[in-house]
Length: 380
Image (cartoon, rainbow, N blue to C red; front, side):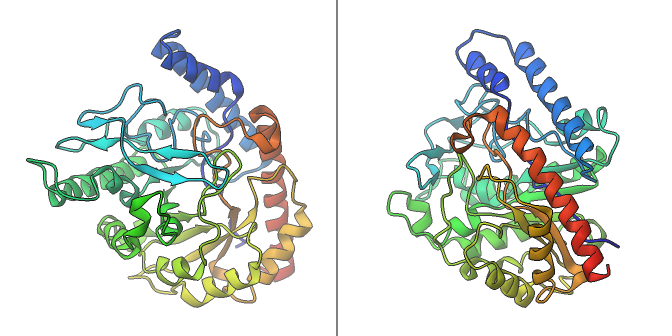
């Protein structure tokens, strides 16, 4: 079997769609008009991905407010916020360029999703001619909706976490039921949990072990056969061509991340200064048997934050080097991160999101061709 390859999830939204989100927030267009733009961008994303030869496709999250907030709000500005939430929650992350992203705040219970990702799967399968995947958000991200200190009157933290795990499990199961062949869980908060940023109090709480335990509460509800197609994505952030935790030593995360009982991992690597060390860590800590499933390491060979397009030869060289540390049968290729995880992102290093969409397709083609070249060189 050749080296498998898979995208993380998001693609840059066209400027026309980003302007439609803004117009909807301002009350200048209707929800149906916004959905028309979402649908058009989703169709374009799927058709362009299929044209590259991508074996498993997605809509690039064109219909989502963000990778993290799609279950609870229609837009990043908070239009269409779910019940029992207010817009003034804590920061999720403060990025290196100075901008931040903020989460809503839970005000009461019960916690329920407003939107399930299976809705996107159903719509995408109606368009796609190839298998469809879906990215979903981890419970460890959404647990940050609950206040860090104290409890909400009438709705304890334990009650919230029980409800949260039920909703995330439902999200994943419904994606599979809707026809997704793969479901990957976004876990960008993993590396950020070791940053200890005084401006962002939750990063000072040493929450990585708690995050992993909570995520396993959901993952362990699935059989080994199901978990073979449940992935974990990690990166140091990727928004407005900036990151939030790349300075955190990677081993602090990688030495623990593979305790998650998932079947595969989408691992940022191409933008690391010492890629070979990342391969070594993944080879050391990934498990051949994670409660009945072998863990496959999809190594990042594409940097979505840079407009410079990698060559297929570069991708192949990276994968051949990775195979010195990671068993060939447990090696895959991916992009470091989603190309644009938040719906409002003008991609400043690329000059425009429309140009960034074109660049993304070129990068994806390089990944696919590079994985083919590496497969030939490795004899897989």
